Amino acid sequence: MRRVYRLGAVAIVLGLTLGLCVHYGATYDENWPHPTGDQLAEEPGSWDGEHVLLVGVVETSDENRFTMRVETDAGDVARVVEVRETSVDAERGGIVQVFGELTEQGTVQHADRLVVVVAQPGYRPSKFGVSGLGLLLAGGFFLRYWRIDPRECAITARGDRDG
Image (cartoon, rainbow, N blue to C red; front, side, top):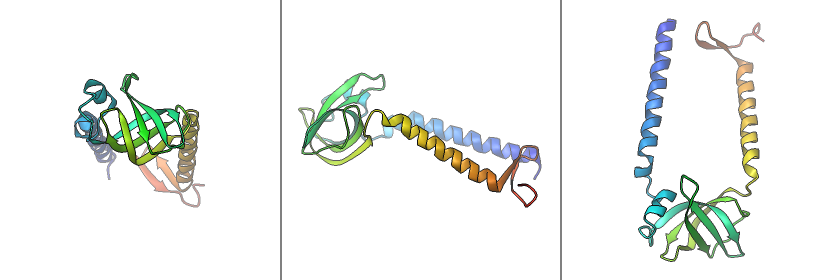
């Protein structure tokens, strides 16, 4: 395949991928069935009585309840939610996702589902470090068996003489 056609195909695929990403980002909030922090701040009572998925930061934690704050995109507190009849394995500052029915008092009586995203605030850098290490290992294994040829705009298998 000629280099011009190959580069043209790569440019078309990258352009289509970029277009899909822009479309997804533009329609994300209107297609998401659960309230964002900004929507909770604008209309605090409109989600009461609904099953919602909330992402928040743990403020306090007891044996069978905890309190979390749901933030807006700007970092302001949209709503403080108390989750009852549920314990959490996250410290203050940890990030959790809670799915349950939101009541008028700003509580979730029982979380149908609870996921700890970040157990401690200090875990975030180590998560990025482990991800970066995994990326380097995967790239190293790939380059051990494959060779990138920028002149031909191709990826070819390494032979015995390539290394």
